[in-house]
Length: 252
Image (cartoon, rainbow, N blue to C red; front, side, top):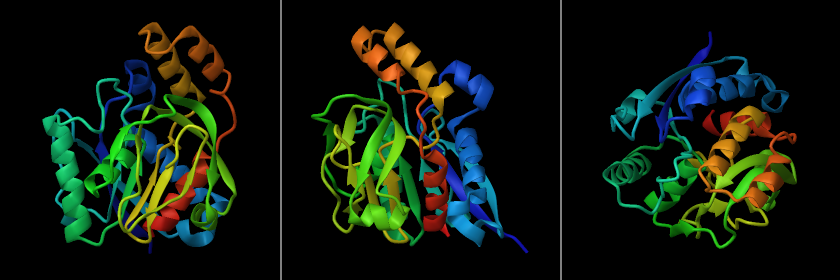
């Protein structure tokens, strides 16, 4: 009999309209990624007996949250809205930070964070977050894993989509970093059984990234030079499915 894993996805944003129309919400995008991860050879036979029961929670507009007792684990999505900064004190951000603190301190359930979600976890656990000295990191980039990251992920480095300027600036007490890139010192956080997070976007593909790049260039958030350099890496091979399988290893 298959084991059902109840994953509560805390949606920290809504995709661009074109992406939302074709791929659905971020919860839907993660469902697709995690379904592929269950079948990936990196998970070996561990995924054969697991069924994903994914629930989606709009923590921005509706500010709705699951009862922690009704989930086996939690995933915080990214946010590509230029107005969402992890260090802001917007009511919905403060509520999200408090929720993550409560789940972390009152349960033993695993928490996954992606990009903005990674940063929220850092803030909730007492780390400094802010604008990265490295500036914008965009499209597929190389992450050099440290000893912990290599042991956990089984490779020396990862290629993953990036779309951020904010970052976790210090490692929270009790956690360790997974590695770094040329523009961001802390590319992931880890505590066995409790937290795994990635600054990058394993759920993004070339279509999603190109839509974001086009929009941010049109909005003049990205210069022509930044756009032209970054778009050349939007279709590069990446390790999103491997990361999905490793997230499952952590959750299970």
